[in-house]
Image 1 (tube, helix red, strand yellow):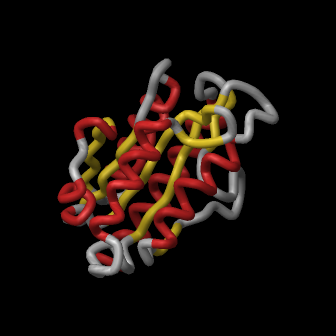
Image 2: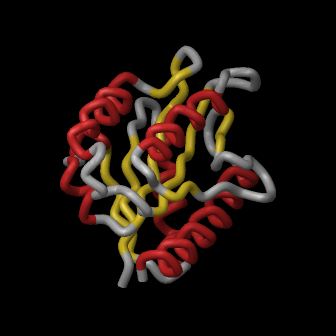
Image 3: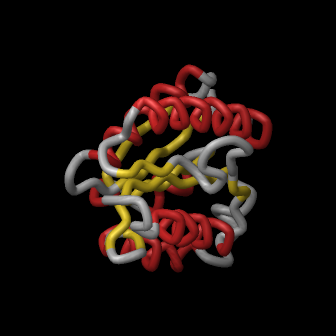
Length: 160
């Protein structure tokens, strides 16, 4: 069975709730889901997974520093083809409308694109990936469900 690694950082719990909702949806979509904080994730975990979802709160228009450091450390994998062609996606929580959540999503997606990953977007809702304003509400959790199922289908199609 294909596996999806969901790596996140969460200070207040909102991004964690999104990660958990995505994991349920990925499993409902037919893939194994493993949820880990970025602090508990190794670069080898990225290599072993069939798909990768990254999540972070938005701080000052960007991702959390601990997630940025992890992505900077992933330069060790750059050019080795270990992430190339692997499905990827992102999710973010932010404190308010106009909180630059889409910039944080783009930061997570850009790192994946530079590694040669295949990024999954959404046709409906947040096109770049689920974005919560404050605590994830019913709309965001429904978007996490759609995104997780769609992402699982992509992983199975490309890696299964």
